[in-house]
Structure formats: structure tokens, C-alpha cells
Image (cartoon, rainbow, N blue to C red):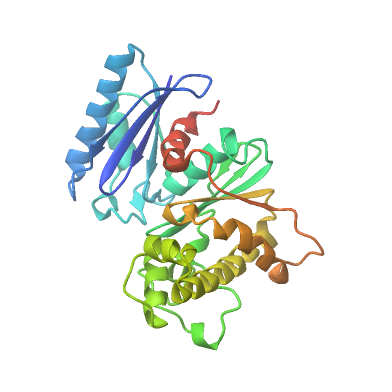
Length: 298
């Protein structure tokens, strides 16, 4: 049995998979806000509950909102800031009394969709998170590619490609730079762009819904979004040339993306034809936690 845990800022989810990938059990708990020690204890309690209910001891993989620094062995780049600079893996292994595998939540999403999801059997897969932030993960022949700096797939903190005059220098990003892809393609970024172009102060989900109902301002916002997403993904294709790109996060539910973006990205891709497929996730919100379980392989 494999246990996967998706450690989020507001909730933490656990899933237990059998050797075929079928879910044995699944449950969630609120994540202790800003409390590192309580987070460790919560994860230990969740594992104890799962193993008590199943009667089995499991391998444990955990998807985190950041990455382990190869230099220090401690967490970095976590939007759950209480995790930053903490020896999370070591503390979890001490609490659980066994080896634990950790990876970024976007990596876990990509792994899930590459192993038994939308891009199953695809040799090279780029998994994308389009939500409150923008992240990504790379899987090659079923193996997660994390990189020597533990930042493989972090496309969200590159500049938006082919930025026009109105897009430069771009909005400020929490990373300290301006005009990052995340500042254009996250959910809050869509809302900001809509307001800046004269639209109502509404969420990305509301913009998408109203666009399908024919609202002109919302349709224009989605058009701008699709064009920017096409440019950003074209940059990934020019470097990685993946067989498939799978979208995740809240914005992955916008069906227009799968219709429009592949038509738009060809203008920016260095090839006479593009065979890369743009796909919605097969496992939806479950992909991250399933991918954490698959950190131990099939």
C-alpha cells in the first residue's frame, strides 16, 4: 500500500492506493495555520489513522507547497511560510519512523497524470498548475525530473514571452521581479487584468462563466488570457518538446483553453507542425495527492 499526502495551506488530504492504483481510503483535515510542529503531528496522526483502518504499513509520499533546498536540506519557496527553512523531511521521518519521499505539489500533479492520468503512456509530460499561483512539473518516461536545483518545471517565474508594450515591465511578483508568467496567468492575475481593462471586480471563475453566457468584457479577458497562455506554453514546447501538456488547478476547468490555445501557440513554436497535446486532467483535484503516493513508483 502507498499513502499520498497533499500538504496544503488550508487543508491536507490523504489517499491510500493499492498496487493497481485504486483508492483504499481518502480523507482530509484542516492544516494548522502557521504552526509547523502541529503540522508534523497532524500528518503523523493521519498516517496512524489510515494504517489503523487498513491494517497495513505503507510507503509515504508527500506533496508540499515548496521544495527541498539541495544546499541546506531544508524547505524553500513555500507559500505556507511556516515550512520555509524547516527540515521537513527529517522531522517527518523521525515522527513516522520510516523513510518519506517529498516533492513539490506541481511535480506530484504531473506524476499522477503521467502515470495513470490524461497523459498515461506519454514519454514526456509537462504538468501545469493554473490556480492561485502558477507551477509546473516534468515527467520523462514515468520518472519525475526535479533538477539539480530542485526547480525543474518552475515556468511561472520566467518572464511572459513576447511581451508587448502594454505588458512591459509587467505586474510585480512576490519573487521580487516583474512580469513573471504567474503575474499574468494565475487566477488572481486574470481578475486583475479584467479590472484593469474596465471589467467588474469578479473572480476568474465568474469571468469564465460570464464569458460562456456572452458577456463581452469577460470574453475579451479570456481571449487575452488564451493568447498569453499560448505564448507561455510555446516557450516550454520550444525547450522541452513534450508529448503532452496537462493543465491542473482551478483555471483548468475553462474548456475554451483546450480549444483556443493549441491554435494560437503555433505562431510562437519553432516547428513546421506541432503534435503536442493540451489536455485536461483525468483525476482533477485528486491528481496532487495521487501523485504523492506515486513518488514510490508503481
